[in-house]
Amino acid sequence: MPVRLLRIPHWDHGPFPFELGGRRTDTETRATYFAPASARVLYGAPGKPRRWYRPASVVHDGLHLIGMELLRTATARNPEHALAVFHFTVFRPLLPVVRAIAGRSATHDTAALTGPLDPGVLLAGLAEVTSGIGTFAISRPYTVAFLTPETDHTPALRASYEGVLPDTADRWLWQLASRSTPADFPLAPETAAVELSSAVRISADWSALVLRQGAAFLGHRPDTGDGDFYAFGALHSRTVYLDALLLGSLQRDHIDELTEELSDVFDTRRLARRVATLERNIAVFRSTYWRQHLTAHGPANELLLAFQNQHRLPDRFGEILAEAADYSRLVQTQESQQISGALGALTILGLPLGTSLGVLQVIGDESVSHLLVALGITVVVTAGALATRYGRLVLSSLRGGGRS
Image 1: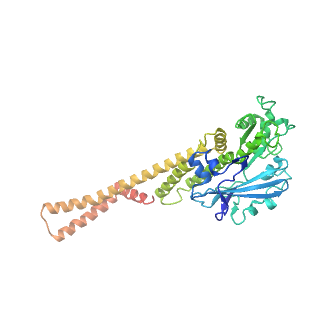
Image 2: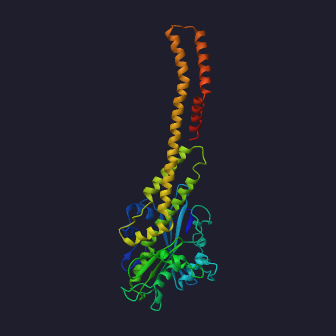
Image 3: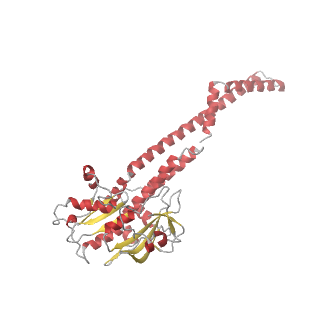
């Protein structure tokens, strides 16, 4: 969820280091999955930390909080912006929990993220949850759910490793990702195939679906317990795949801010300076955050692309580039008009004066009175020239240039 960072936490640096067997998913390990630029955004750099974690153990009504993370995602306008991540293990049916987090009015399960699991309590003194308004506001926390079925959960299971996945599996996956049941949000039969076609088939064992307000991972064979492959899958969903979704969230937030900057670009008289700042912010975003190829490992890329497509990020960024280019051309036009106006002013002021002085020099007249008369005539001629349509155009160009 988005938060405002009140101070740098005295937590350990880096992402939460989950462990499985002899494998520890710390910064060094996870950075090998990502391009260097993406790794710096997600994990920081030596001497410049931007992510912190803290182990925890809070149990409340079937939810066990096992750790928290803070990822600093400062922007030009919001230097305190950050994302808070809470890792839970759930010991009761998962769908009612994510529905409660989504604030479904039909659910009677209100225990999620309340009492000792209230984010305001957990982050007291470090960060405060945004009020639900502003550039980075979302109505409810973004959820990433991971569920493995048992043998009796046939709607999610393949008949064999090469068996066709039943349609009910993607319906279940949709419910977990959308945090809804058919009573909350009935998926239209006419569009269901399109909505579910974006599911990512990580392997025959499990699939993922990324939506605007949540993502879900669902297994397609029975979970056999300790030592099962799903322990590895859960590790990836909490680490590398989570990081892909976090990077998508950072991209969305920065594109939201750039859109806001574009909307008020004319709210100042210094248009040229405002457009130059906007172009610089776009360049910084493009070099720092904008990635569509995240890693050599396919599923993380597919999850990032799915998140981008859900929020139309490629299209929105293309619109930002086109609109910024239009504003840049407008500034260039104004500057050209200003230069032309300055040259016209020099012509109107300099031509009469140069002609008068040239005539006096040619006839050898050194009389002071005649010089004053010539200057007076110059002033009258200049005033007359400025009163013409060309003169008024020159003055108008100079005034227009002053607003840049």
